[in-house]
Amino acid sequence: MTDDLASRHAGPIETVGAKLGLPPTALYRYGPLKAKVDLRAVAKIARTKPGKLILVTATSPTETGEGKTTTSIGLADAFARLNHKVALCLREPSLGPCFGRKGGATGSGKAALTPAEDINLHFTGDLHAITSANNLLAALVDNQLYWDNELDLDPNRITWRRAIDINDRALRHMVVGLGGGDGPLHEAGFDITAASETMGVFCLARSLTDLQNRLGAMVVGRSRTGRLILAESLRAAPAMTALLRDAFSPNLVQTLEGTPAFVHGGPFANIAHGCSSLVSLETSLHLADITITEAGFGADLGAEKFIDILGRTSGIFPDAVVLVTTVKALKAQSAEATVAAGVPNLLLHLSNLAHFNVPVVVAINVFADDTAEDIHAIQAVCQERGVTALPARHWAEGGAGAVGLAEALLPLLQGPKPEVRLLYPDTLPLAGKIEEVATRIYRAGHVTFTPEALRHLAQYEGEGFGHLPVCIAKTPYSFSANPERRGAPEGHTFPVRDVRLAAGAGFVVALGGPIFTMPGLPREPAASRVRIGPLGAIEGLA
Image 1: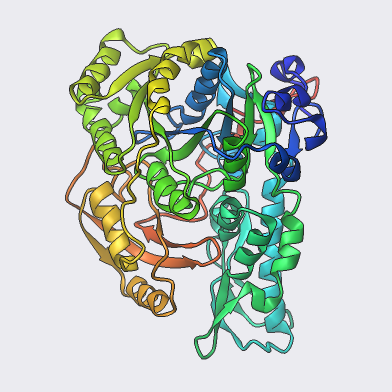
Image 2 (image 1 turned 120 degrees about the horizontal axis):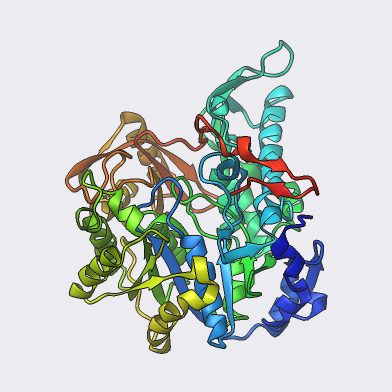
């Protein structure tokens, strides 16, 4: 366990659980500062009516992010300071960003989770369990080919991919079965665990029974006659569920100020659906008066997927949305590097959120070198459109720096729940759903599909999957599929190069432009800065 200063001053996890009414017997300790929550105990004390939900999302980010997690943490601490029963629901960090470009995902400054190093690295082993379950299925697929292949699985039509929780571009495309008697040669590849369908299933399942059913419904390939082969055909789902049983229980940790935080599940928002687990969200909603969760990257990806995928699946929608922006992010949206030139990006995100009929407050995450002039310029633009924008200084001041933001949100939580509008109906064809997201949210002029993508879409429609929502994978740095097109581009072409069926998770993934489900490392990976200090503490894990 880490020996960082914050952890040495944090309260025992039983004290954190007590703030939500959880007795010590409901917690399975992983040391003094983190625990798994017994869902059976939660069911005994959960109230019937869920609490209020705040969704934190953002404008288009820079590569280092603009502080959604930090803002979520600071806001939760602010509500706690105002004596509200509040909890966080956040995603587990992936080792990909931790050792890649972005760094850790536990907040920073005085708005952070603890024990940070534990959470950013192995935590309670959830992502390792998801990786193992995913790869067990891959092994069973290849074992089917090695022996009698009674399912008549076509080696050239296997769609199931292996997973690993590390950025490793060399694993995107590969050939397995080399070496003579090791099985039929066939193409394969790895996704990062956070983008795997196993992760999607894990995060959208409501119970262990639902988890097993969804795992069994995952498609691994086709027979030589074109028949779908499912994981349940390989009798894989029960064993996969056994690997995931303990991981499925939510993790409880705390902020530096002792606010409860459920950190569970970790899908990426640019290539997966980007929301923390449904089971942790429902647990929090039935224990806390106010739950704060985040939806990854910009609102064009995170908020849209939260509403159109998780909300559609669960019936859970936000009571209010916080749109995080920074002076730095808006300046990065224009060649002029000014707030005025970057404001159209902010306005386009606000316009998109209006599609969903959710009330929005803008949080300006303040950095030390921001000027009062730039902050006032953002506030003025928002005020002209009837939107409250407030500077938040939680990074430097902790919860005290976000009290104003919390107070601005309270009136939105006291009224009736807004009737959130989905972007498209279930009955719209899959291609139409992709076009709706691309034209209405990304503001594309038109959408192009490769012949392969069109063939797959027609195939999925014919096999009864046309009712599923779509999960679009694209760059988070632009509304378009081109990461260099900043600002608020409109009328661009959005290219769909292929689509993948995630039948167990319950959506169809559309790959937009040059996006990969296995990221690569940058020239100077963050891993090169990580080290062990003289006393054994982990250093350099930003």
